[in-house]
Length: 394
Ligand SMILES: [Zn+2]
Image 1 (tube, helix red, strand yellow):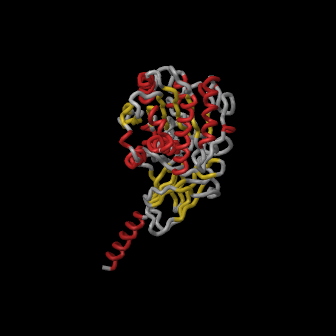
Image 2 (spheres, rainbow, N blue to C red):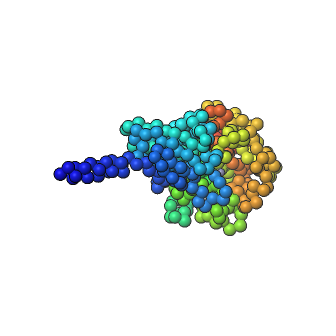
Image 3 (cartoon, helix red, strand yellow):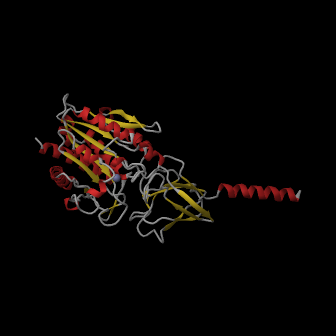
């Protein structure tokens, strides 16, 4: 009898231990991690660089079995944190926060979970996948003004959304194309895009824009990359943002190259592509515009950059002094040796006046923490700048 009791006790203990064992996983939309080792309350991880040439820094994992523990996460790759450390969300609350400045020691951080904490999500910033877009569109005021269409299907048969905002006037005066997530990992761009869309539909002072302009918006150019949690940046065999010359390798870029000239009807004046830069350091912690090699297009970009400075009256500022002219820093011909980018392609379209990238940082903008809300408010500034820019063409 005594022996049986001991066996039951041991079984019960092992079950309990099994339940409370630390487990790191990435088997959910946007998830990305390689687990090198778990020992005691320490885990060794690094970003999954599948389909990526060289190193990049996107990662997003779930950890369970953490109740009442202080877990240390050691990264076996450098440059994987922004200024405010990792972003996290505990117990599926979807309330993402930055862990805070100076939390990273020797490329690792420790996190103390309370007794009621069952699961934690950690990432380089605030993840954004199709579900986030669906939730946003569900709650969007005046959403009935949108036409949610399909650009094409991805290789893994996902819908690549194409959102049309028709002008209130029957015949639009101008058309504007907006894209994001050519680089799957650049999640913070999506919050800016939410702000743009919400403002176009709702801001009282943007009535003229609604009357005159038809928009085409593609929120996820690399949909499979976003859902699979891939870097997307420097993708092998081809980066989506180098896929605009020769035969496009990707469905979304090939389709966009066909659909947009037909849709334009000679009214496309502006094409905007939203990106996020490198994770931290000089030149990566301010909002900026990337100058084009074509001087005529670059002049228009400077006009837009100044309008952004005027309109960015929220917490996050955009300064024209941060404009990155063509020929400076990484913005040279060498950067485009692998193929034409979106803006070069869009800049070559009939009637276009402005084709531009906006770089929006992941974590830190001139000493301020990026949040979902202040990113959306910056999106509002972009919407106002679009209206001001188009008015300057009249
Ligand atoms: Zn990018």
